[in-house]
Image (tube, rainbow, N blue to C red):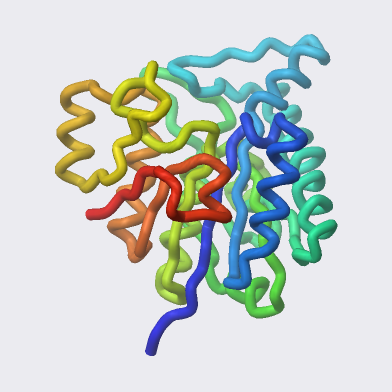
Length: 260
């Protein structure tokens, strides 16, 4: 039996921070007829709020050290203002959306990342995703909107990488749907030359990814995203795309497609 299509999309801070870009994306996202799920980050907004509150933000290799104070700010920003802004924006375009953290309906459980060379604080690594709960929302024609907050099942919330959450959700839904995963950000795709915004690598398979990684030909910030992409492809996700926001309405524009 042919599976129904499902789109899992993740948007980052550069879209969330731009009111017009966000509104345009949400309008296009709302028009998609197939079931869909949206995951969002919001690190830039959290950093701004931390600065206003006089709370220091510490980053190591582009990753946030989440102290107890920073966790409060992350939850306020991600699960509060940003999540509800996105949900209300989708309601405006007649998309019945529901904002969620991983703690809601016990849908995403994580373990605290162990302190090895770096102690990242209250950062969680996903252990389980309850795809049946997510499916029940989709069956009711409700579009889940996940922020980058998970929990451990024992009352502790965690800051969790939004790219990873998108990959894990897409993977968990593969048993039920024909899943496409879309990482939406400000560039056109994975670039061969970071200085040339049109130097998009249009197709990357596992061999090409290994080659690029070993040659250090792609930026450090892109490497974890690509790892998440291939993790998803190895767990029943049909297609993965990395592109800018226009891809949501026109999948013929130049972008990066990943496959095994």
